[in-house]
Image 1 (spheres, rainbow, N blue to C red):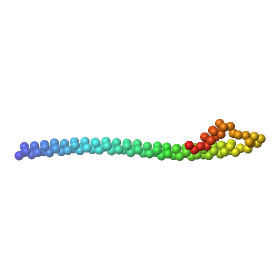
Image 2 (cartoon, rainbow, N blue to C red; image 1 turned 45 degrees about the horizontal axis):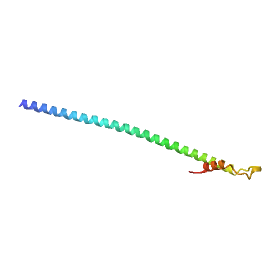
Image 3 (cartoon, rainbow, N blue to C red; image 1 turned 180 degrees about the vertical axis):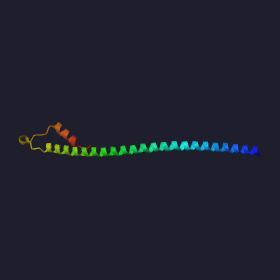
Image 4 (cartoon, helix red, strand yellow; image 1 turned 60 degrees about the vertical axis):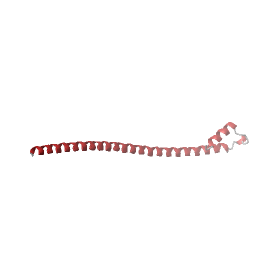
Length: 107
């Protein structure tokens, strides 16, 4: 009878050891997956910050270009409507007129 009890205890010990080993492997995989997800979240947060910074820079650059375009348009308009005094009837050089026309175009 004690022989059967010892065999049963041995089998129970082996079964519990196998279950503990299996659970340990699952825990290791879960920790590895959690670490991977944590790194992924950190990477996405950095990417989001970079995207927000890039959008802010693009908006500031667009505002600067809009301001420069307005200044350029005003300068071109003043050249085209300038009072030239004694040569007020003179034609603009065709190359200059073409250049000014291209600068004013919105294409």
